Image (cartoon, rainbow, N blue to C red; front, side, top):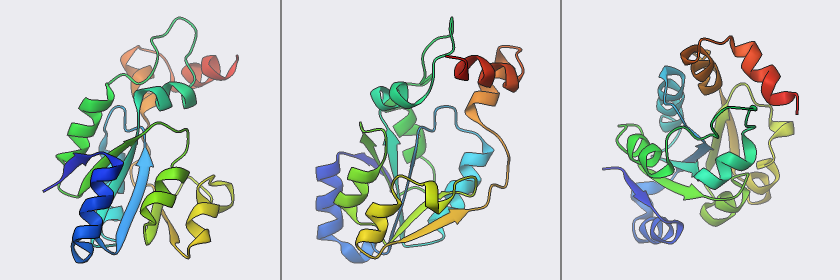
Length: 173
């Protein structure tokens, strides 16, 4: 029974039924074009605790963190409410909450998940959220990438471009 919550609604739900939610696993991302890599990652994250909450970057947040190649439409491709609805419909997901900041640090501080999950392509030392998780004794779990796919590569493929050309054009500014 997953749903899209505001942060205040989610905090109230967790406080009202901690046994339903804790230990809570939190992950975050843009999830612009959902692919098999995302689905497997979310299933693995869900298996780490009793509930899985996704912090979903809002449209404004995505525009701030994803470069816009010259002449290309801005990201996200899919609007935040649609991305949230798709994620909330996944069996592994218990809740989705939008956030506007470039990182999930404020969300982590507000929810204090027992486990913060990210993909295995990250390193704990370089995660901007790591100090927030460590400040209250939470754990960080990096999940191995099973299906090497990316939204940027999918967009490039749809446009008939190579992923390398898309990445080069977005980093040349």
